[in-house]
Image (cartoon, rainbow, N blue to C red; front, side):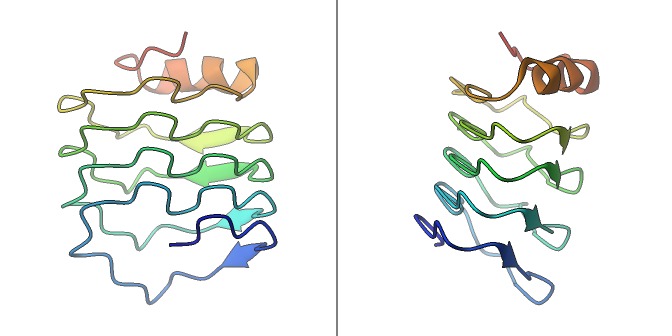
Length: 127
């Protein structure tokens, strides 16, 4: 959707309806200047694919995904790949029971972020 929008700095999703979306793969792929992103109104109940979702969002500093329903997600591979500035990421309610692929999910992220994530969710392998 916003794939490759490298000049995009902010987005407002307050009236954005995602009730019927099943694939969020690449939605913010390489939005490298995106600094703020409020996804509190995103409905992810039907989503199965979040691979590459924030790939290359190297300017994002914090992201709260605590409202995401991830029970149907099968692919989160490379989801946060290259999010090198990300220091706060709330995935405390992620349900990973249906996940089949989470390869390289946090590659290119800081070790500090990986340690924080491990404390939040022990079911994800951050190595």
